[in-house]
Image (cartoon, rainbow, N blue to C red; front, side, top):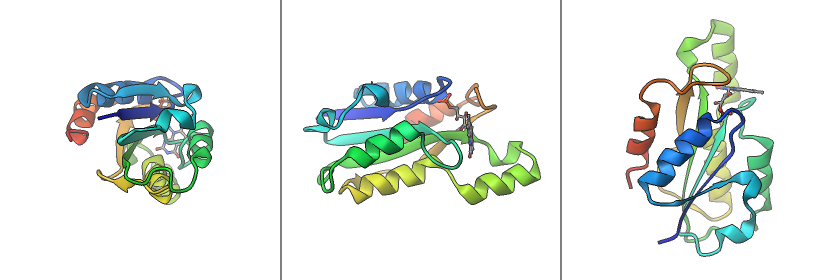
Length: 149
Ligand SMILES: Cc1cc2nc3c(=O)[nH]c(=O)nc-3n(C[C@H](O)[C@H](O)[C@H](O)COP(=O)(O)O)c2cc1C
């Protein structure tokens, strides 16, 4: 079964989660900047991960998702994850802001479904301690549990 994990990462944290996820499912790992839609040919499970930036996935991930032709993911099982701040570790104003603008994973999941993909897992967020990381303790283990297909 062809399994593919596509990610973007500015500071390396999402890459670490993507590596753990790809390893867990024995899937291929590709950075979005090295990916084009032909890489999706024959893929049966597609997982997309991005840092949350301004409540969304990165421009690269959005452009990639936008480039997938309509219906192209029919019969493909899909899942999405992001990395993000903890709502509990920021001040009140920022907490309200980040809750209001949301996170990347649910939006990626919606895009994948809009292209015909079948969502097989709830979109998940993994916590970074600061803008540049590191990942909070236990998050890589949580990622492996999340993807336990
Ligand atoms: C420009 C910018 C905007 C960000 N916006 C958000 C946000 O809206 N919500 C959030 O939880 N984290 C936000 N963050 C924190 C990122 O999610 C964090 O930098 C990311 O998880 C680190 O992953 P990476 O190492 O793969 O780049 C932002 C970070 C940057 C640099």
